[in-house]
Length: 89
Image (cartoon, rainbow, N blue to C red):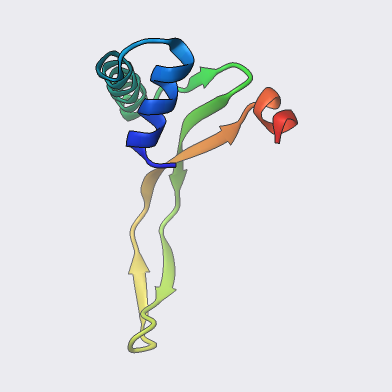
């Protein structure tokens, strides 16, 4: 399912226009991005939790040349499914 299909499904389920559903989906995406960017955890109980984790610097290998390369430390987003979602699947 892509974003367009998701918006259509939300519009149908909530019985609102596609434009209204698209606005809500865009707002939700913006809020989650904003909060995770600040380092906050966003928890939608029973559905999903977004957190920020630090990935340490490490050595990797360039697959084209086989040479060892240094991969810098960075922050990554972790997504964990909630209990209700896990149980539904």
